[in-house]
Each structure stands twice: as C-alpha cells, then as structure tokens.
Length: 155
Image (cartoon, rainbow, N blue to C red):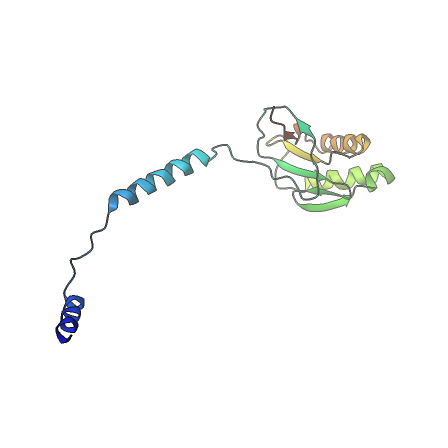
C-alpha cells in the first residue's frame, strides 16, 4: 500500500511536457471573423438616422442622399439641425411668423445656401399645407436644393 502511495506522489510531481499551442485553428477562426466583418461592413452606410417619433413615408427610390442641413417636421415640432424652432401647429396658425422663424433659423446656420442640400424629414401623417410652407420658407432663405427623406422599400 505504501508503494502505491509513493508511485502516485511520484507521478504528480513528475514534470509534464510543455503544452504546445495549436495556432492553425486560431488562425482559421480569425480568418472567418475577418471575412464575416468585411461582408457585413457597408461602405455607403446610413447617412440619415430617422428622427425619433417620425414615421417617414415609403418609397422605391434608389437615389442615395448627400449630407446636408436637416429639417425635421414632426407631429408637434419643427427642428433645424436638432434645434427646436417652432411648433407644427404654428405653421397653420400664423403662416407669416412661422415662415419668418424658419427662414431666420435657416439663415442662422453656419452652412451657406447652395453649398449643400436641405434634407427634410417629414412625418407620413403631416398635412401637405404644412410641408409646402416649410418648402416655401426654404426657398425664401435661399435654399433651393431640397430633398425629402423617405424609407426605401425593398421589392
């Protein structure tokens, strides 16, 4: 019995051969990850993130957007580059004052008219009269290159 104990202790204290790292499987896994990331990477990217609370209209247009001055027209607020300018209800209440506020906000940006387009994110349920007043205010402020932002529907 004593000899068995001695042999067990001897086996535990014996030096084991150093473990060899198998690099082949690690390299294979890294190649698979790189290929996956390259396939999922989009060169074009999503230029515009729809504003919170807006339901954009659908479209089959495949035209890509350029970066530009963003106007968000929601059910309650109108924003220019993220700054709240006026309430959407003001567009129908006092058209001249609303157009003046919007034109002043557009003129107050650091971007000059004609250098970049205006991107208008308008809610799907927005009254067309409100949208036409926004477009008219853009024209009065000198912004004639106006693009309506829509969601592309995959067909």
